[in-house]
Image 1 (cartoon, helix red, strand yellow):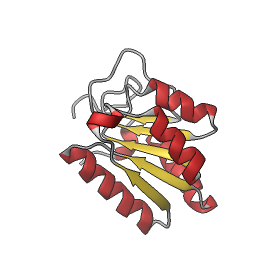
Image 2: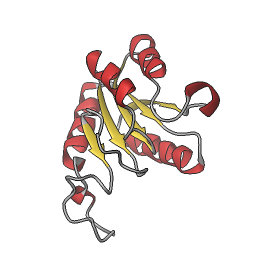
Image 3: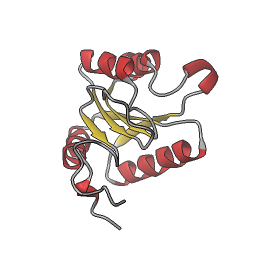
Image 4: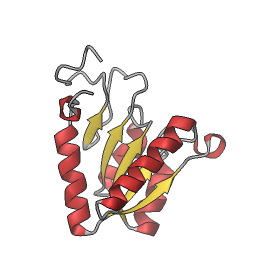
Length: 141
C-alpha cells in the first residue's frame, strides 16, 4: 500500500471534506452506473457518514445523464437540495461543463477518477487521479 497523500491534491481534498463536515455542509457523492462507480460511491458514503458527514449519492443513468458529470444534475442538487460540495467517484476528469457550472454557483468539486486523463483538466477544487501530471512519486503504481 502506498501513502494516499502522494496523490496530487489529496491533502487539499481531505481538508475541504473535513471543513464540510465541521460546518454541516451537504455533500453530494456523484458516482457512476458501473460496478466500480457504484462500489466507490457506497464506500465513500459510508466512510463520510462515519466521520459525521451529511451526504447524498447520485448514480447517473447512462441513457438520460450521459457519461461523467451532468450539469443539469449538479444544478438540481445545488439549487433544490442545498449541496455545497460535490465529490465525484469514478468520473470527472472530463467534466468541464458541469464543474464550471458548480463553481459558478459557489460549489467546490473534488474529482476522484482513474479514467484516461485528458490533455486539459477541468477547473475543479481538487483532482485525485493516479496519473495526474502533478503527482508525486506514483509513477510505479
